[in-house]
Image (cartoon, rainbow, N blue to C red; front, side, top):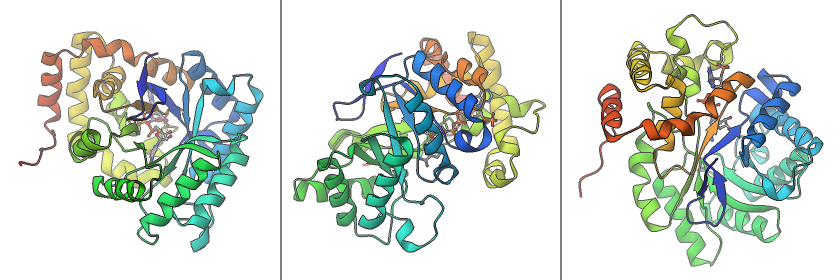
Amino acid sequence: MEYRRLGNSGLQLTELSLGSWITFGSQIDDSTSGRLLDMAYDAGINFFDNAEVYAHGASEEVMGRLLAQRDWPRDTWCVSSKVFFGAGGQMPTQRGLNRKHVVEACHDALKRLRVDYLDLFFCHRPDKQTPMEETVWTMHQLIQQGKILYWGTSEWSAAEIMDAHRIAERHHLIGPVMEQPQYNMFVRRKVEVEYADVYRTVGLGTTIWSPLASGILTGKYNKEVGSDVRLKREELSWISKRLLTDQHLSKVASLEALAGDIGTSMTQLALAWCLKNPHVSTVLLGASKPEQLAENLRAPEAVQLLTPDVMQRIEDILDNAPAHPEY
Ligand code: NDP
């Protein structure tokens, strides 16, 4: 497993990492979660992703319990949490990026994950109700208190990230080093275009989510699927409506044929395509079954198959390259 630097920071994360959204504390039982965690760690993965909102805190509780049961030295793995959506409470003090909620969310995540510090702490979305200065100061103070090591953002615009940097610079505070954006063959604009100046100026690591677009990029929705798959879950129908379109399924069919031509699987092609982007620090894997994770862990082997010619063939099928602004 190769390591990549998280933006301009000194932290090196493995190119693949494991996330727990929908799965831990919800879709899968704890023994399967443990199995996935073990497989990931044994394959060399050093980063496990979590958030206060995942299963209303239960995802962090499960991961914390499982991590505590293992004898893995704390300096061999990193764990994250994210603050914004809250862990179920709907009061204004129970969500957002105000100082009160950020500090309390951090304390709660430390307890649930059973760790002394969070390696990465993300602002899960921008918060229009809280002055940016308040959030930047709070993150800096949590770092100074030793409760978090690196802070970052998720689904912020480039302008918002740069605002946070300007405030941090003005007050000699530690600014955000990483962003967690969606990135996959169907969602490209932020990572490929919008953040281009941020990579170049202040540096930005990316821990990208939904690399398989919730599973559609495995090719399984082009075939008969059982009822136990993500895009058939009632509460996720809003995602299925957006993703399970004829256009997407037809592109996946062509990509799967291309994957066969070059001797790999659709899943590995989609993950390797994300890995091929040098601005991706780590690809966050999601899996509900050990055999899925086993397949996904082999994705780095497919990167060498992505020659310029193959990349062009993929581009021709996708036909969705985001346009760069003209200067
Ligand atoms: P993916 O797009 O890779 O989707 C993962 C899901 O696809 C699995 O749970 C499984 O669902 C299916 N799948 C995965 N591999 C295979 C396979 N080999 N064969 C068949 N099906 C497969 O990633 P996620 O959307 O889960 O995102 C990864 C992580 O990113 C999350 O766990 C979370 O940590 C983070 N994230 C962050 C967000 C943010 O706002 N910051 C938002 C979303 C995710 P099933 O078996 O149920 O069909």
